[in-house]
Length: 151
Image (cartoon, rainbow, N blue to C red; front, side, top):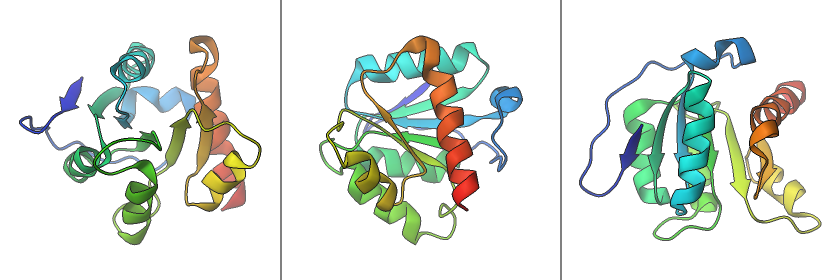
């Protein structure tokens, strides 16, 4: 696991377009959240299943990370310091390199209408926190499957 902080660096990784459960070991995931407990949990679940996970603690560092590792999947919190998830998703969707990279909101925003607003904002999926470890991968696959059907 690489955690991007203001003084750290990350290596480049190849990008994969098709995301399927059987291909989890080929995934390069960028998890961006200001809560270390969430980053630890996401990293442990995905790494256990073979994915390479890189983390960042805010959107600005997340953007730097994404540009370095070209992830196959991005898990993004909405409420963070420096640059929030809304600003980061807008930046990614405006960049031809990352327009089609799947981005799933991993957020505590769980009020009526939040999911629809998040999906309309450019996200490919929505997983509310706290999430269950036992269903986390299934939730990711569900989000990716819904996104593929809408495309």
